[in-house]
Length: 159
Image (cartoon, rainbow, N blue to C red; front, top):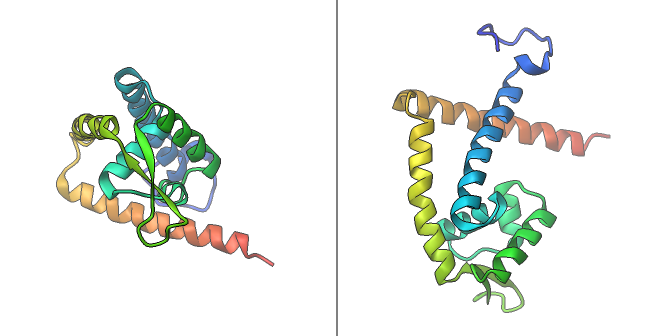
């Protein structure tokens, strides 16, 4: 990627979205290897355990929305985790017709072990990046995400 600002040309391998996607793919591969070798689960399953461990009981639709994953992928991952007894369904306290997903004892154990390992992976990933640059990067990524969401919304509602 060139250090020059965007000049209006579009070369796939020379633009920020490509680098963000490639970075995500590499980070995802590392996490997937860790999930498979340590817990015999895939990344979607690990992500679900992590989200519930961090946010508490969630609905499947909320998990799909927060993770930006396809609902069908999340549904399959939930089924795998239920069959392995890492998560279970509980009745929503406010709306008794709704079901939330929560961690079982084994799910809590995986979450706790994976949280420690995840912190190590993240520290390794960010080892050469100053705190100031990390803060700046987060702000830039938040702006890019907002722009991408706006772009998607305008495409969906295009006449």
